[in-house]
Length: 82
Image (cartoon, rainbow, N blue to C red; front, side, top):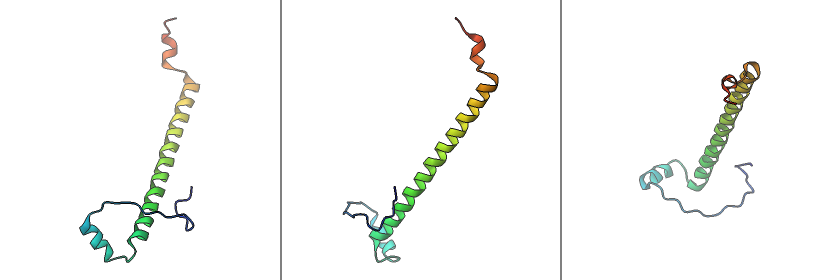
């Protein structure tokens, strides 16, 4: 899903923000909505990358564990109570 689409429909949202911070930001931008949208898109992209990286690391861990299990078996195999 693309987070930055020029054709995406926009809607008003209610945000509560620090008044001093907003005043300071307005010194750097005349379009606070566009700036916030850009920053939010960057945040979403960053979170998606972090989630993919976390999943990749978990997949690698599982593959390594499966390789160990295939090579030497489970330590519990020799302790069966049946």
